[in-house]
Length: 604
Image (cartoon, one colour):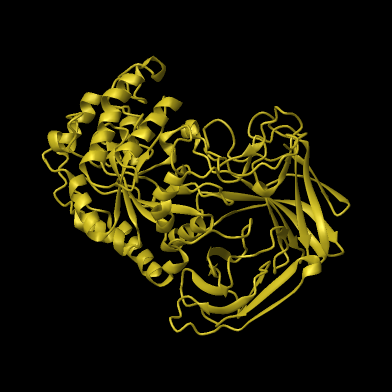
């Protein structure tokens, strides 16, 4: 075991603070039954999330006032008494619901599975439950079971049906987690009673009455003990051995890991993982939310997540009448058109073989092929460093004739330099993401080290750093985005090993991020830290200040702040180390330094 003060801290996706009880597992011990269960899911890569329930009736407004926050949390945000919220059931009559239309839309979009809310935190079952009369069949004028209709439509279309089930939060029940405006606070509740009398019976119903399910998507495991998480997971596997359990069941009991809402991995994750993403800002329908992500952003997210070995679960929020909003429909159809041409690079694809991001886009792989996703089309030629494989052929994936693209490979193994240059047409074949397929023999073989890119830039991502802790009690770590958190002790420091192929003078730029969850108290970004950079035998001192901001188009919820750290000349090629240290840390014990990367950019 390495000394804890210098061990590599790897960026694992973890569930957001609300889901801390469901921390990510680092176990890689193979489980033959799990391996069999998860094969379809690894092939799928892309699924539809559907948040649909009583919350679609108020659609973000209560008693004439807009309620801030996501639509499906309106009962909690407006602190609506159970007796009042129950009255929404009398108004819920989704006569425009058509299961076959929903499933057809998912299939046309290239989605391989559907996860729909069978019961969200408001406690209302969207199916005919015998365990609770608070359900769509017994309590609404609709009187139908939409889950049975969806099950039939999914079987017909070859789409896997999956159920979301809130197994701990239930604001309708005294002993369910979350409702402290009608009932006692959580510590005073008899959660075991709720778990035995409602959660487990309803999970049994879902597994028994709707045919084979792809997975049960549990959520927010508040109050769940490890024993309860293991028990409900075992219940799922007993009743349907092929049914997966999501990571949010809690206590690492699930079959795969779940990222936080709208969170995308920065680096490669060891375990199978999935991220749920909204198409606008809310999950459940909210009539005043028109902040729709564009098609380019959605495709970039799909590709980015696939390149990290994850699945993309993209949400729609149907109306109370049972219609999927038209902006969602339009975007899904366009994604489907892109996948019909480029799906080979997504379905069943393996992740980027490099540990770091490429400056021009993303890479997905399969045996015998590398798929280079060019999000920004270069002028006539693409150059990639680090591919050791001998390339047998190169062509545009959109070119069904597989017309050969001229390419050249050269290198110097003595310094681990490998360069591949590919000649390209002037115009890209796709307006969103054009893909070059490289045929190779066997699996990908690439330079593992952090290295200079063809533009001359070296990007040292925080999650790839060696972390040097001053004490065993240091709290420096990484959040789900791969961003440094807890760097409040000036004695902690980071270092990176990297390779330079083209010496020169470089501007050193730090990328930090805004606070993940801004609150009224405290700044969204904090500077003023006195930093020391040591590289190539030189020392640079600077103060962290805000010199600019930008947003990554494939991850629009993450805003970067740029800070100039100085300039350094590296006069020879070779292996180097950069150390980033703090001579003083402003706001110690508060915000600290939220570092995402340090970049060495050729000086102009």
